[in-house]
Amino acid sequence: MFDPADCIRSPARAYSPDGGLAILYGQLAPEGAVVKTAGISQAFKDRCGPEFVFEGPCVIFESQEDACAGILAGKVKPGDVVIIRNEGPRGGPGMQEMLAPTSYIMGMGLGDHVVLITDGRFSGGTSGACIGHVSPEAAEGGPIGLLRPGDRVRVDFPNRRMDILVPEAEWEERRRSWQPVRRELTGWLARYQKLVTNASQGAVLRA
Image (tube, rainbow, N blue to C red):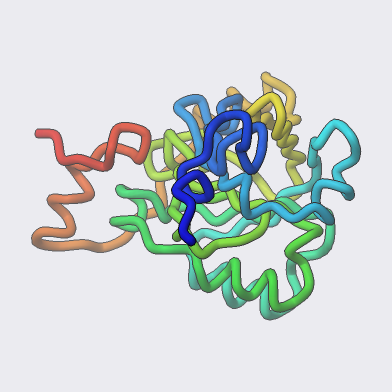
């Protein structure tokens, strides 16, 4: 017989102490980012250690297509932080689902060894340590757009933080010299890119 309590559970019978999603903040995501904690394997947690903190160097891709090609070419190694940027509402424009790169990471046996961070989005079928909706996005000069290959990023899952281990003076210099990635657009896509807000604000159009 069907027992509703198996579907809608009381706090005393919860599957886990935390929900399946978490919002991260910190230097890399001042306005927030989303991680599906329910999709993170125990093997990944064990590799992080008892504090459940992951730290590693960045491997940066400027689009989902570049990321797919780079992952398949072996550019991602165990211990890396994979950055896929310019896939947010303004940068895409729109937000592609990052299912292909996550699938390649899992298929190449890297799912328990790397973190993937993007200003794009993931679907409910994503598994692994995948962090999306990073805001502000790269296309508006957010911190994810200022990262350079080899920068070290620290993700503290229990404390819901993502931080960048780069000296402040160096960071400010990058901010002053930053230029957005230009994509030639016309018509409605150009209008959308001009008016859209980032993911933390709902990716709505504002005049």
